[in-house]
Image (cartoon, rainbow, N blue to C red; front, side, top):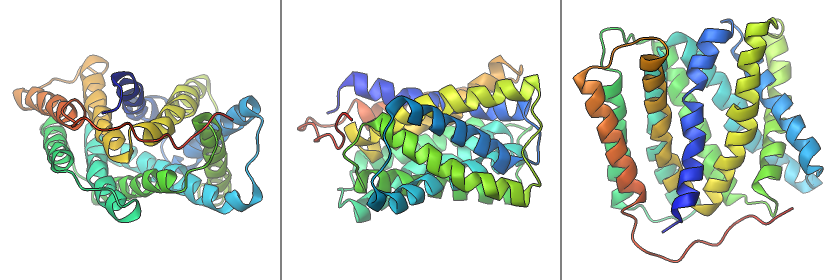
Length: 293
């Protein structure tokens, strides 16, 4: 079983991502999903590149752009679309299918055994998250739902391929490379399809700073480390913290009410996290797929 400290550190990433919905909707203008994603990924990637001071080998570049495209270009673009077209809790709930997708993809791509407790934890977490958004205020938008599902599938594939195409570098270096690749793909797409980047105001700059530094540079370093240390299945099952955080922030910050069903959803999500992590059978710690750069 992975160490509790490794699980807790990995859990920090989805908890912070749950704040992204609030940051996007409160501080950034609509109609700039790609531009916001570009201004989130590229500055964070370049900042980390200055810290690690290492460029990838030529034969790694194609794979890094595939990973950057899945984990950032596609995922963030569709995430931002879903965030604008769906309430934060609903947008996060659609993404809650990701752990089940990862379990299936890891079975085929990594020859990982599908463990019943992981499947049960995934189904329980999905049910718990669904209860979190069963309110009269929740509205469904077909395009928003498709965007959310597409984003979840993209990041699921990116998480599994990150583990399959492991690179002998530190998680911080891998994060820098993927963020930069994703940002380089996003920037021309934003300029071509949206006519430019979102206007920079004090409010939008604050939101972008949050999304880029703690919401990207820090959390994806934690996330890629978690994929290597505790594995894709366990890591993505911690993703249920993201919608739970989004809904709880709506209650705390926006004054939204929590019904009895939503409180039950929180308890079910917490139970699913316990099932996926604390009840894991004892086994040898998997070999780390990264080394210090």
